[in-house]
Image (cartoon, rainbow, N blue to C red; front, side):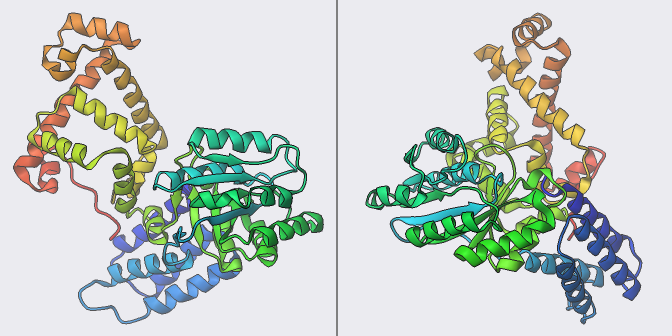
Length: 448
């Protein structure tokens, strides 16, 4: 989960507001100190943290707008200022000319080559003709790695294996580049404080004249990110930042705040190792996930990528009628898996991020999905279409065929029955809160 510790700290801080009887100066000061502590622990620059604190205090002291309570106003102030701190709005790269060229720069081990493959897939899925170019002449196997990534993604690869001058590689393909909508140039990793390596980057920069120069920076770099970011910016004029490895570190604040040094926006964030684990960075959505408000827009975007509009409409009708079978459930589970991990999906749903579900529980749920898919793979067409015909004898056969025990198969059938019952209740009530009360619970409220 992205910046999990920072997110938990911010959720705990904001929960104090909802539990407090009064919103006074003491509560605001306490809130600001908690936010400072959370950001500093995630390696955010000290001066930037204090600037943010000052803005929150100033806005919290303003007159509360009509129509909302002081608590709601304070939460909105924190949300707004955190969003502004991270860039305010999304910065989307426009593929406006042919070819549009993106040059990736960054330190050794920052994940540039992997990111080049992810970027290529991101834009290929959006209908663009993409090529990736290898100009890393320093790292062993850099050529082979990018060539394989290009093959996996299904885009063209441009490179010269034994050439030692990156400028020569670029010039060799310069005329061919007009065939593409987008060309992604992967450069060698370098220490931005090394004069020799920076000189090489400068020569390549002059030759390419890229439309976008994206600094790829690892989230685990901490506050050292700022000095490096400044050096790269001075060399080639960084226009945007891609933060990688954001899912596995508590120090992401350093990389995020490094953007304040270059004045360049975060364009993408890497949230996993798979080729689809690259997301456009939307400050509002990112902060929403951090503080438990969810990110329903990203959830819908992911759903659209894996479920066609026709299928979605058909499934909606079946689910609301309560007559969906195991084949339908199987399709939904397959789509869910394509959208990412259960944990990532949960944090996008408004209100769910504040439930603090244990990571172990989420992993168990993902494990169940895998087992249930095996069980359904061992069923006949008739059994999938009508689970009610599955007898004890059939249960034994399905369990043996899928490598599961009978109890695990029974759990799948129970889940199917409960899902049908849930959807029928939903259709009858029309109000999800009433439905949840019938089940002995209630819908969790979001932070707002």
